[in-house]
Length: 366
Image (cartoon, rainbow, N blue to C red; front, side, top):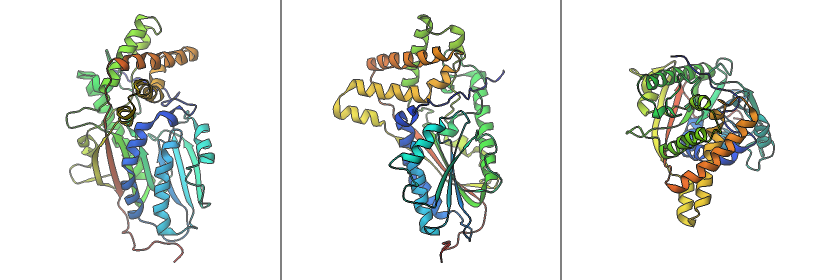
């Protein structure tokens, strides 16, 4: 069974679309902020005035990174004072919309560097399934929702486009790829972390029953794709190549590399928790009753995050754009017929790299 390469054309829709419509990842990241703050307080800070390095793995267009980076910097400042340099490095694939990212870092009113001249933002255009930093350079790592994406699509999915709808050999191929990629991700981050460093990973999760919460949305979108084939908007061979390289994991799958002694590549698990994430769009709908706003938010979310991967099966750029607009329009129509909330699940892991004990005070100005 041959693998299908994920196009790096754009996992997320560019032009700031992801920043505007990624409410779900923003909400999941917000749930993990207390864990990130605890990690910033507990990581080992070496003496001296060398810069501290925060890595934001999978930054996309930057808006959802502002609150986490601001929270981490605030906690570190209580430990090292106001003068010590802090370097924040945003990491994403080379085809990411870095123009929007840098616009956010430069001008957003909530940017984390606005009142801190000793904070230095930067970016690296490289997949986190490769080495991103030299060995032992990262003090604190943050990865929110990005590690749900596999390094490659291991198989086509007959009749659907999401791994959760696959069965048999196809599902087994996705399971193997997800296991291999998770181990690779952890191994690379373990090398990049300093001894005593921390890594916080936020992932869309699955309930104990194996549900993601997005099944109604994905099934509606799958029906839309079938309709577009029937209407000859896309060809049947293009539809068959449309597969998402996203793989939400159960808690047991996240913990598997750490069995049986709780260690993997010098990393240990400090926390691994599953949270419920309520659908903010549905909560607003219950207050105002505006159906069109509800389905527009749901459809725009799907378009910004998933449609670029689906449209990579279409070779012509003009047809890709038309496809995205058509999917969003028809998805709104389909969602109107079956209104439902998309309450989802969030996995939050805090990993520590073996290293020196944290001293009571690591301030550089004492």
